[in-house]
Amino acid sequence: MKNQLSYLGYTGSIEISIEDGCMHGRILFIDDLITFECDSVAEITTAFTEAVDEYLAYCEQAGKPANKPYSGSFNVRVGPELHRAATKQAYQEDKSLNEFVRSAIENAIEQPKQLATIHHEVTVNHIVKHETQFEVPYSTEEKSSWQQISQVLQ
Image (cartoon, rainbow, N blue to C red; front, side, top):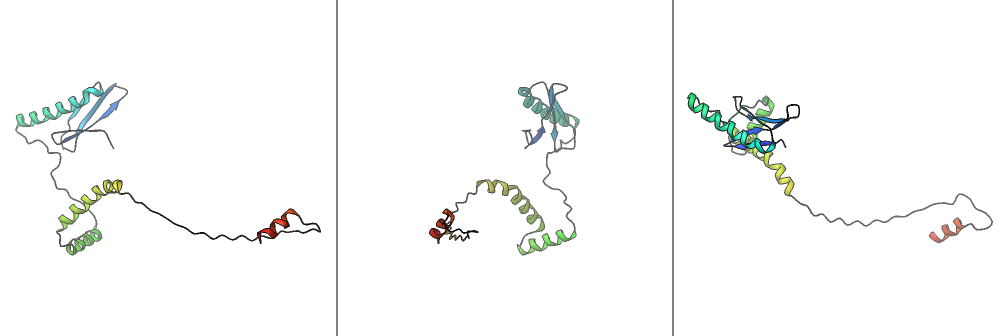
């Protein structure tokens, strides 16, 4: 997970510049380019919130609407076959294509969280019957210890 800041619905990145000895970032997911910087970790949150506040004040003063971080809609290009399959599945589930896609995205986002909380208890019982046969490759007049063991095991 990347280091991020959040304030008034805006998200900010955090980068470290070793060469310059400072921290910097920008407001993410908007069309305007708004950056901030500071000299220490303790100052990064303040620098970010000040950048957001200054951006909103500038937009109000200039009479232009501030970019919202997310509009709630976007275009997705999936190709004709996936489009057809999604439309058929949405129809079978009695949903609009938009509802189907939104549900699929929600499930994809929630799935890792759900997988982390599922615990399984499994008990496995095995009965193993193992037989071993072997031959002693030689014999002598006198019974060797191998022959004696072989006879005992049989």
